[in-house]
Every structure is written in C-alpha cells, then in structure tokens.
Image (cartoon, rainbow, N blue to C red; front, side, top):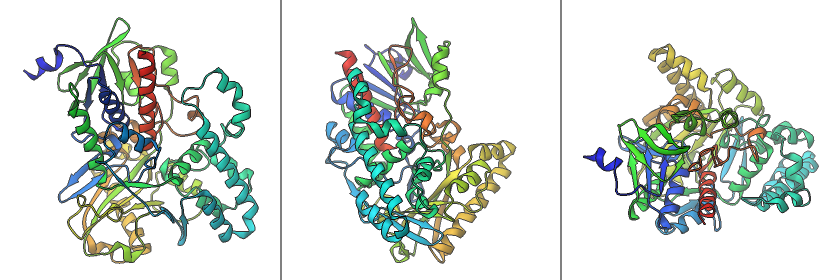
Length: 512
C-alpha cells in the first residue's frame, strides 16, 4: 500500500530533496514556505546531518555541531528562520562576548572576544614586541572581511571588471594559505597559535587552510557565537515540523537513497534501499556531490567528474561525556568553548594526528552545552554534558576497523583514555569519579551515521584550491538536478543555510 502511494501520487512534488542535512532542510523549508510541494528523503532516523542529535540513555548529544554564527540581525540563520516563520520558536543564546572561545596553549590562556579591534589590542598588550606585525595582520584581516561582505552572490560582467578596484585584497590573497600570510607579517609562533586557535572549525592547519576561508570563519564568529536556547535537537526538529506543516510537503526518514534514475537527459526518480522510487520535477541533492554522481544510472560527463575530483576534509574523534556531582563553573568552564593545544606548533600537531595517526598528545576542543543554556533536554537535572573533540585520520581508523573489531575498539579506548587523562590533569581534577556516561565517535562513525565520505567533517578540504570560484557549483549537467551541501556551497550551519538561500534564489530566478 505504501509503495503504491509513494511511487504513484496524483502529481509529483515540485521538488525532491535528497538528504535532510542543514542545506537540504533550508532549501526545503524556503521552497515550502513559498507554496511549493516538497518531499525530503533522509537516510537517518534523526534528521539534521552533522547537526543531528542522538539519545544515549538519559543523555542527549549533538553529533558534530557545538556553536554557530549567523544568528545576529541580518545573519544567514536569523534571516532563514524569519523567512520560514520560526524566529519566535527557535531562539539562541549568545556565548560570552568577552571570550566566546578561550585558547589554552600548554597552560597559557587567551580569550577571543567579539570585536577584532578589542582582540587586536589584547594581543598587543600580551605581546608588545610584536605590536607592529599584529597591527598589520589585523588590518589586513579586517580589510579582507569588508571585501568579502561586498562580493555579490551572482557576480556579473561589471562586478568582475570592478574587482581590482573594489576587492584588491581578495584578489591578492585568493591563493594564499594562512601560514603564508603569517610568515609575510613576521608574526611570532605563539601569536600565530592564538590567531589560529580556532583551526578546528575547519580542521586544517595554518599551512594548508585558505586565508580567505579563515577570515570568513573568524569574521562570522566575531559578529556573535551562538547556541540554541533549547538545544540543537529542538532547532532541527522545529525546521522539520515546519516543512511538514505546509500542504503537500513531507520529510521521509529512514529513506536512504541508493540510486538516481536518468531518463531523456533528466533525473526521473530516486530509488531508496527500502525499495521505494520517489519522483520530483526538480531534484536537489544534499548528498556529497561525488557520491551523487556515483548514484546516477548513466555515465556522468567526464568534465563534470573532473570538477568533482576534490580532497575531503579530515574527520574528527569525538568523546561525549555525561558528568554528575561536579560544578564545571568552579573549574574554569562557562558560556564559552575551550581550545587546548599541547604546544604552539599547530602545523606539527596536525601532521602528527592526521598525517601519522598519532593521538598521544592531542589538541582538544572542549564544549559545555549545559552551560550555554538553562533549558533541560541534554542531561538529568544538575548534571552536565562535556564534549571533547579533535582531528583524526580516517585512513587510520578505517584500516583498524578492517583489521577487525578488536584492533579498532582497542585504539578507540586508548585515545579515549588519553583524552580523559589530559582533561583530568589540566582542567578537571578527579574527572573519573564524575563520569556517568562516555560515548566515542571516530571519523568512521561519521561516515556511517552522517553518510560523510571518508568521514569528512566539512566536505571538500578548505584549501585555497577549493575556496572561491573553483568551488563545486550548484548546477549539474542535468537540467533538473542541483547540488547544495558543504561542498557545493560552504560548510558550517551558517554556511550551509546561506548556500540553501542562494540556491533557492537561483531556482526562483530560473523559474521566472
């Protein structure tokens, strides 16, 4: 009965969305709010992609997202929620503006405040002998930030002609890494480590990450770092229910896309592992572009496949902890995140962890969501959630998994115990006595539950070669197939929401 209904409705929906990650949900909600009939197919039982939440006993954890930007007036997330009528249902708490991120380098603590000028002045106060180089670097960062704000979503011929005059810094540094800019300004190693202390937000060391991408990310958080007032689960569930509230719209969970049928040069339907065939006049894939191309039942154009030949970002090792009988505030935690580095050479740390699979002395991102909001929903009353994450090699954990469950489980436990040791020695004395629950996720876990190829956390690696005009476009060689995700667009919640907004604007323009 259900098979007949799903494959033979009176008319196909206007849009079939493959995947309920943030970009897919954004596209679906925006299209539904303007009267289009939309169907979303999601493989997981929990929608949201990297932002999905999962229960573990009395505890609930968000898989990969811990704080976001774009929630201020005019920000992409705020604008999206206003457009679909969720601005009152989904609210956000702002992390401490005086230090929303705190960088700890071998015991030395630095606070990252909102306001580049204030951040610059604090750095100069801490490192007076580097005042000139710090001032010049921060001036460049702010100049690039302002030029990024002036880049149109769909530049025309006149925009390209005016670019040398309106966007001189963007053009000059479009192929630069963050490390190259550090070196050009003669910044001391410790200052570099502080300025790159949020590198886990793109999982690349300074020697590899695009300078422009770094500026875009720190500029986003500089305008405000936010956490959902009722947690990420409520944020995602609210969007899903909003889509379902519109006539003719649905979000189908447990429908993993296994193939895409092409007829007459157009996408005709998507097949799922449950045996259903789902149709739509226009199809938007929230699935990784390369995986989308591999699902087609026809040969994809070689030029398109070459454009999809990108390296993935690395993955993460995440430790989800439930704590009882301890007040995290008494140990230096609050409404902020803590980035810990064992020493100031971040490039070497990434080489050890990702290049060699050595997690014996890891950097750590520590997030305390139960201190970001008083709302219930993550832990029993009076107890806390602490999430610790770091970068790891997918190949390392995949090889262990292929060697057998014993080797994989042993390595997971070894890294877990080392991370717990670091946290206990440096931040939470007696931690082991307060552990109520501990759950581990590796890059292979991300590949399994988020359908992320090679366990990537941010889609295509955010190197200079894959930032800017060379980014994978929304359009494909098939006129009714579009892409929108962390690679066709940009990662992060704010980035994927903005990508969804841009794609919907493109679809509306093409339909007019």
